[in-house]
Image 1 (cartoon, rainbow, N blue to C red):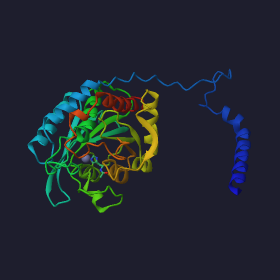
Image 2 (image 1 turned 180 degrees about the vertical axis):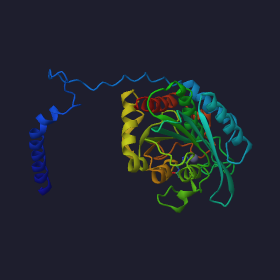
Image 3 (image 1 turned 90 degrees about the vertical axis):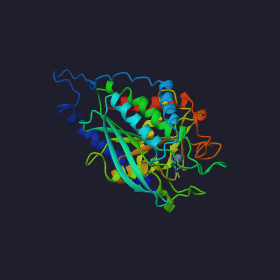
Length: 344
Ligand code: AHN
Ligand code: ZN
């Protein structure tokens, strides 16, 4: 009660002050008053933005399939290497400056793993930047399956989908001459995390995931690297997939979430991007980017109403091309493209 009285008093005082200074403000230069003294008020002149390119759903789908055709992309394997080589060649072909970041990380089980993060930059000299990221490695086992649990998964959705969308966006980026420079970060060793029955929040095992983005956050490819904001794509390819506001993203990057979800609705994908927050992601590539680099970064990740978490194919052998729908790749890809193109 007391605070509302204070607020209304404060408001009316501010209103009075504003009214007092208003004539003064209008006399100041650069306040949209006509300098010929006609009293006409001009609108700020902003150049119209170039039309946002259309994402090609079939092209994005083909990029997902091309990855899956390499087989599982488990760190340290020939299939993983071949897929990364293919991605680098594609990105260079689209005019990107590509930096590869290599190192060695230790998995939850003590295994040493080679790490290869791939960073593709357009307009690398621009100070203002936007970071888009997705992991490209796939899980070395199918711990959520009932069969062949020790065999690696194909990861069409979990691994393939985010990369497929980013490659399709990258295909258009050499046309972008306005606004911030773009960095696509393809993270490695995201999915070698410790298997656990539950996705308990605050478990120690949480830091065994997303080793590539943790590495990047400690040693960015450019010293002092920062970006205006970031968007992470994870499991963005399943048919009928819907995307709820993800809680970690809401904690660190609620303005980015608002921007992405609002943009989705504006271009007709409001049914896919639901304005409701769900706490179902234990950790992901955006956590270290938010916490260490302090780049506000939102995760676009499917929340499945059937499982109350991820898609039913998650970390099973069911995560193959049959899960992927070009319409979902289009909804997510076009939304991200629109966000990127509308930045000045
Ligand atoms: C957990 O929440 C444990 N994992 C989400 C990160 C992830 C795994 N994304 C794809 N695979
Ligand atoms: Zn996974």
